[in-house]
Structure formats: structure tokens, C-alpha cells
Image 1 (cartoon, rainbow, N blue to C red):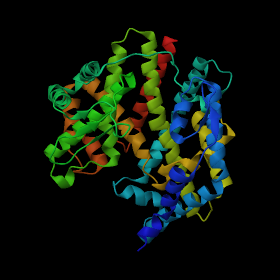
Image 2 (image 1 turned 30 degrees about the vertical axis):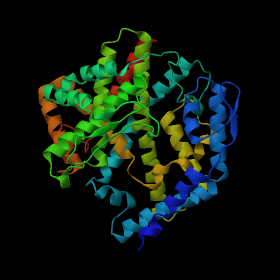
Image 3 (image 1 turned 60 degrees about the vertical axis):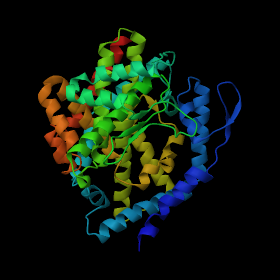
Image 4 (image 1 turned 120 degrees about the horizontal axis):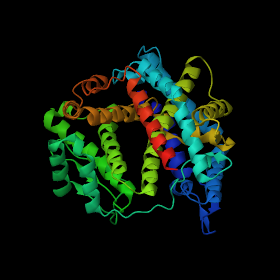
Length: 437
């Protein structure tokens, strides 16, 4: 009886955020007046024209700021829903209630946050490097997504992309490569953009068919990584469906990004090792550092924000807009460090993040990415024993709790070691980038 009521906050937010909110016009790189949209915002944040980036950033967040009282109310209602269900079901906290479905203890969640805190010096180094490479006196929040090597362009035809992916994933062994080749050559992949085709890329399928990959391949180097990523999902599903009964075949979100990230991580190591082009190496490292920043550091910051606001309400406090802005601003200052100007506008970013209406799941992106990096390092160092463990993990589906399956693959997320290893790999890439400059 409470279910319809409990979805109200998220439904209201989604209607507002996807249908009702309108943004002002700004001037693009050619000086033309264009209406800002959320889709265009992402493109403008990557623009080489700093004035365009700043205009888009200010226009977007000033618009959300006008509605922060309403959006604070919807977010507070969502948090209260989480706490109501936790208390009704006798959980000590909303965090413990959310983690229970995967049999995860709060210590794993808290340990992720603490380990990332301990390694924030890598993020600060990256921000210092970004500031230097962009030639800026001050690095602002709207400077964080523009590519560091904007003048590097390379065409990678699809046939060549397949060859690069197969070469990069060679450490996974003959069995994996044979399946990979079969998938590429027997109609698993819808490769190119087409009229009426949805954007983006994903892997999907049913229990009794092979997986399918949808792509919109555009001959960019990023598309090569997308191919490796989606095939990681596909082969995870293939192995799981072939080796588990239907009820245990669907692996949980906690494990979903492991196989895809193992593939990307192996691919970037291969491409870096086999590239003699300095610009290409810088581009590749920047690509992966950005993935790392967005998946580990940013999602952990989101996870910490969720933890703070839920604990505040559980202790009897309220979530007024000014308090949400203060918490979010302080977290940005902590995670980005002294090299970044924390522009006032960013303090209202919490108001546009849909993930916060499905609390306590974004941390899984950070743990999954970290676990994948640890597995990849084991594969490169140990060879066949690590590959055997990894393939058994892919075959396991949802036959046991996620932490148990990862332990069998050689990764124990009840300790800080996998996250530490992943963050140290981030530091290693930073070393390589600094050496190339």
C-alpha cells in the first residue's frame, strides 16, 4: 500500500528534470545563440572554448538554483522514504537496509570512502597536471571535462577496432578470444548509427540466446574502448547463461561493471605499450584517468553525500537547501583539492543528480571498477592461474553473494587492498603522463 506513495518523490523529480526544466540561450563556439539543453551541456563542457564552457556551466546551475527549494523538498522526501522502510523492517539504518540485498556490511561502504580519502593526493596531482596542461592560472569546475589533447584525432575503422580489441584481450586466453571472435563475426553486434536507432551503446539479450551489442560506431578511438566494454558485458552474460540455471544467471549490479572494466583496462595497457606516438599516449592516459575520476572518485563522493544526508535525517535533522549546498560544497573542496576553484554554482549540483533518488547504489561503480583493476593486474602478473579464476567468476552469475564470488576471483573487498591497488594504478598512469610532458 505504501509503494505508490514511496515513488512520488522520484517521479516528481524526473518529470521536472526531464520535461519541465528549461535553460537559457548561450553563444556557442561560432557566436550563434543556442538554447542550452542537458545533452548540449555535456558537449559544451568538453569544448576547447573556455568562454563557452563557463557560459554553459553558469546557465545550467543558475537555472537549478532557482528551483533549489522545490528540489530540496523532493530529495528530503526520498531520504525519508528510505528511512521509513529501513525502520519498518527493523534495520539499524537506511544504509544497512540498502546493502542487505547484496549481503554487504556497512564497513565495506565506509572503507571505500576512507580508502579514497587516503589516496586523494593522486586526485590533487591530477588536477595540478590538468591546470598545467591547459595553461590556466586558475582551474575552475568548468575546466574539468575539456580534453587535455584536443588536437589529437585518429580514424579507427571498425575492422581495425576489432583487431585492436582482440590483441588487447589476448591475456584472457584462447577460449575467451574464440568466443570474442565468434561474437564479432556472427551477428552479435549492431555496429553503426541508423535512422530510428537509439543513441549510446549497451549489451542485452535473453537467457536462451547469445547476447546482443548495440553501438553507434563512429571510427573514434573512444569507440574502440566502447566495443571492448560492451563485449565484456556480453561475454559475462554468455558465460553466466551457459553455466547457471535461469534463476542464478542474472549477475547483480555490484558485479556488472567488473567484466567490462577488465576489458578496457587490458586494452589501454596494450595500446600504451604498443604506441610510439607521444600525443596518442597522452590521449589514451587522459581517457582512462577521466574514466577513473568519474567512476571511482566522483561516485565515491556521491556515496559519501548520500551517507551524510541520510545520517542527518536519521538523527532528527532536516535537509534545507542551504545545508545541502554546504555539505556538497565541502565535499567538492575535499575531493578536488587546492588546485581547483570551487565555483559557487557547483554547490547546487546535488539538485540535478537522479542517482540520489535510488540511494546507496552508486558506490558499486567504484567498487566494481576497483575490483576489475585488481583482477587485470593479477592476470598480467600471474597469467593462467588468474585467468582460470576470472573465467570461473564470469561463469558464476548470481550463484552466490557478490563478495564471495569476487573472493574466488582473487579480490577481497572486505579489505582496503583492491581499492588501494586501483588507486595506485591511477597514480602509475599519472607518473606516465608527467613523464611524457
